Amino acid sequence: MGRKDPIKGGVYSDCWHIPGGGVEGGQSFEEALKLEVREEVGIDVTPYTLEQLPYVDTGVAEKILKDTEETVLCHMEFHRFMIVIHDKIADEIKLQLGGDLVELQWFSMSELPSVKQIPGGREFFQKLGYITED
Image 1 (cartoon, rainbow, N blue to C red):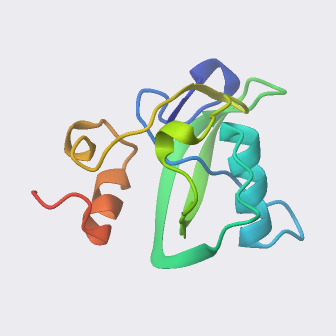
Image 2 (image 1 turned 45 degrees about the vertical axis):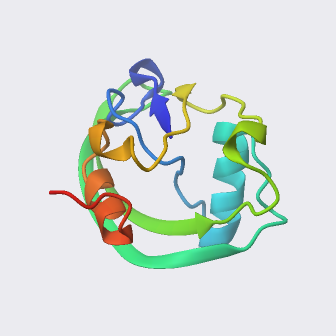
């Protein structure tokens, strides 16, 4: 998971979140996902299977535009994917900070209940069964 830099326009910069980002005109969700993962954490997920999950959530947050420093209201729709990297364990995957992230960290499933996440993050992991207590 990563944390964003509020100076670079990061939404929920005090929370951990799954890397992701917007879809540019003409991009598929899969193309956007591959680009965002490579840009934000330095992982090329092209060789792996991407599975779109049936959980689509929405959210609204203030965001600071990079060019004008104007504060705007950002309406977001979250399409989630699962990528199974079957030939490596987490410790073998080299992470590289990029985009507006300032910190990256792997979390075990047992750590997820205590991680401060973006709104909807905890609920998403509960839907997957990774967090079982309320």
